[in-house]
Image (cartoon, rainbow, N blue to C red; front, side):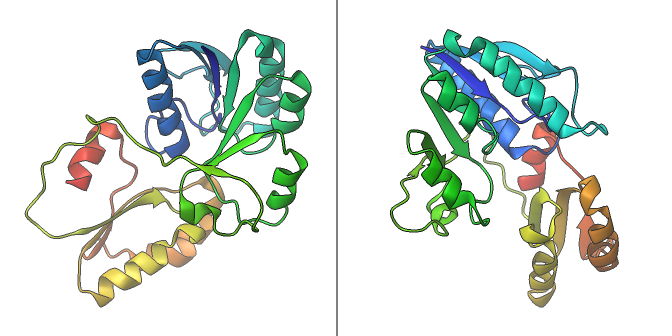
Length: 240
């Protein structure tokens, strides 16, 4: 099959540091190529893939670039090439739906983030011909009954992580540092349990004020330590 994969433009594919969706897209493309499919990845220009890369933006990453400008170019690139594919798999939330409906190409939308926000059930109802996939049963809980969304749990290559385990007992928190991810709760729980906590976290620009006010005072450098972001190589040792 000829398959298009549409990645977010916030990070490269795979990401150099934090970037959950982009990492999953990288694994998916590689595995589809291994299975013999012809895969084209629409992503940032600094991405690396076993498929064919269609670079949409030279480099978006964490530069001060209007994300809507980059997204407009992404949608235009897809519209020009849509007929080249048997199926289009999108990982960019909802913005592609009106376009792909009119292009008439089978498409799939994997929802990697929150689907409990107001209005999203209405979006799903508006596009009954579209196929939606969640990444967990828990993610789908906020959806009203009667809305059909399939589930496909996120996996990783067997070689992704080793089996070495360190002997010390430490709690880990590896995630983007946002209020909804619960870093303050992780710190409170670790202290209540008298366990050391290591935080490997991306601090988005939009969350700098939150980090300075609510998290930085709780990080003492001893019981609670901020490691910073980790890449795929250092993450294995961190998790071990």
